[in-house]
Image 1 (tube, rainbow, N blue to C red):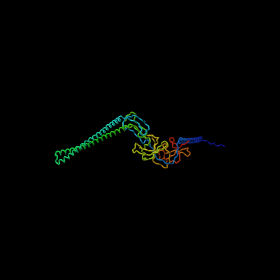
Image 2 (tube, helix red, strand yellow):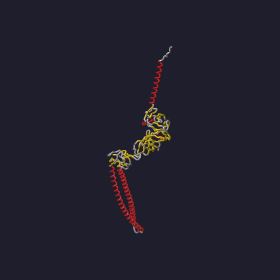
Image 3 (spheres, rainbow, N blue to C red):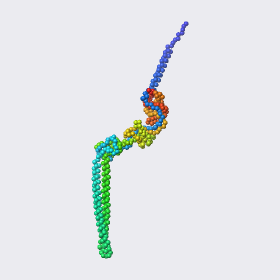
Image 4 (cartoon, rainbow, N blue to C red):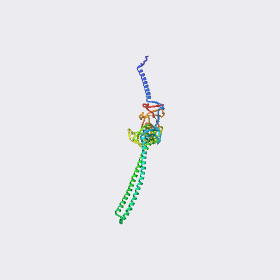
Length: 416
């Protein structure tokens, strides 16, 4: 009996084989693509190479930053009150001095000659005064003698006139003798009054002359005292205790009146002079609290004065407080001025990660701490240290706060 033999189709067999191979290739490519994409979107990092911080509830102070400079409260520019030649320099820049210490000494020969001239003038005027007093006393005695002689003549003439007047009434003498005695009496009376008036006038003149000499002596003495004070000013002394910051002369140099010789700064008190951007003017006011840091120590300040005039885009602000003695004049500090507060805010420290992510996302660690995933967040209020989390994070979640510059296109990070 005949058996029917089935005919096989080689084409269908090849198609089936190729289909299986193609499917395998596609699956392999997809697997490779998944692994590659997974590798591209993932980064690995060591724990010690990153910084991690937990989101916390807390009070957030509003603040803004300003660059400041330490300035001494007392700065003295020492000027030459008299001119002269620099003879001796007792100190140099950087030396500490006490109040009254001589910093340098000038010499001025003209002043010394003026002192000798004024002393000579005082001696001459004193001699003139003494001579005038002696002459006045002698003249007073002479005038008194002349007055007494005139009074004596007047008394004699008066007695003779009275006697002749009685005799003439009784017709014992002639009218001529009576008139002669009368004229003699009147002349003696006039002579006496003239002597008295002359003595008074001469006394007044001599008193005025003596007063003028005394006034002249006092004027010369006052001038001498002023010149001697200028001689004392040739020694340039420190007005306060402090440090010499500038010394603008050299030994042997000739300086004129008004020349700035040195600058002296008191080291007992300092304040901070800061430049604040005009952007912060609405948040700036007198007595506002501020601070800066000296290492780990926080230094409290307050705004003492706000300059009313802008310089460029900045306004000058003076801040006072207990500046540490270790700070020096001209030293720069970064000042934080406090403006307002958020009582209960979710807080993260500021850092480079905010700049890298444009403040739009962060890497958040899972509970195991081995993996950090990229998450969109919303930030709000911030100061120079912290930033407020508005949404996207909860208190207690941990966030990588170091730089993201190598992970900008990563979705998650494996922490080893």
